[in-house]
Image (cartoon, rainbow, N blue to C red; front, side):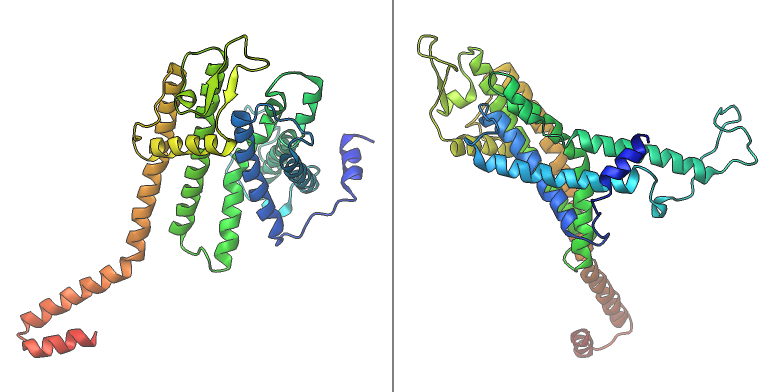
Length: 343
């Protein structure tokens, strides 16, 4: 017995879904999006969060998402731990060096075998990485005290961001096979809008988080305090935190999201401005992210409109050529109109 045999025995009861199962691709995208949106929200607006009955909605969704990704990791381990899938083995153009210690006999060297071994190692690291970002570390927060303890232990789930692009591409392929997103431009456009929405959510949560941390350290004025979202208390009035929340959670989030989008898409209206150096740095970062995504979106929209209007432009070009030909041949004006109407 060794580790590989033990792992094979443990994974034997779990059967992977068929390759054409759409639900697992939808589940990956939905639950990954949930982690990538809910965790920054809790870090910024719910520092007191902990996996207890006080937050039943988050606890239930966290358990459902973690359970799903545990199953997904098991499926990944079944497919790629012991041996790589045969349909993923492709020829390689790897050129070995003469002094390569792995290659003892160049004439008998099999490039495909080496590529299988390399790909096998990558698959194993992928399984281990998927396991590391699935483990529910937030339950370790019971061993610690203080705010943000559960949120900090959930940061490992944010690394699902590296898989999100692949999840969305699979969904685009599924929708394209059903005739909903056949145009490549439409696929890129909705993916860019999704990226803008996610980036705006992260930037808004980060802007509020930076300000809250500054206010807890005793900074005189931050933008949420200027907007009336919370107020600072003196050390005599404060118990655990020196912040007195004045607005609801929804109001604080909408204000932060509003600032994020007007800063990323435009230059802002000046109604919400950074008041500390930390807020200013985060504002600059958000503007750079917004300019990058907005530029990509506008360029893609221009390309999409051009591709959709290509047939009409070709028809107009052919009509102009026909009219020039008819004028060159001195065709009567009435006949020219009849010919143009026919086409």
